[in-house]
Length: 129
Image (cartoon, rainbow, N blue to C red; front, side, top):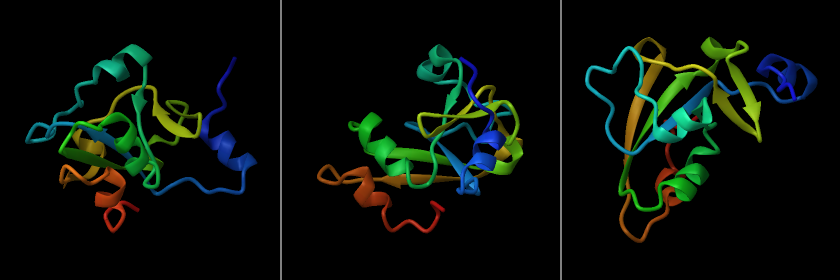
């Protein structure tokens, strides 16, 4: 089955595309940021880079990074990927390709206490937009 391209989805819906999309990683990215981010095992196995919108980041972190006490969130401007390499599947943005330093807007580190959820840590962040 053919997955519709991102542009087609947004033309057919009343929603506009997000300004930013985000990649969650459990360890700090290399400094300087690499020309291409090394793919996680999950991304490599699935054949695409798993991304989230700002509202999805806390939920995704709570589901998949339950044991982590710190996370790095990479902010990417959505418009640069508005091509056939970006597909919305199951409500999440998936990048069929990769990204690197030239694509990154900024990176933010989040730290949580043992009794906190990622949602609690991130709920007041103005950086996630």
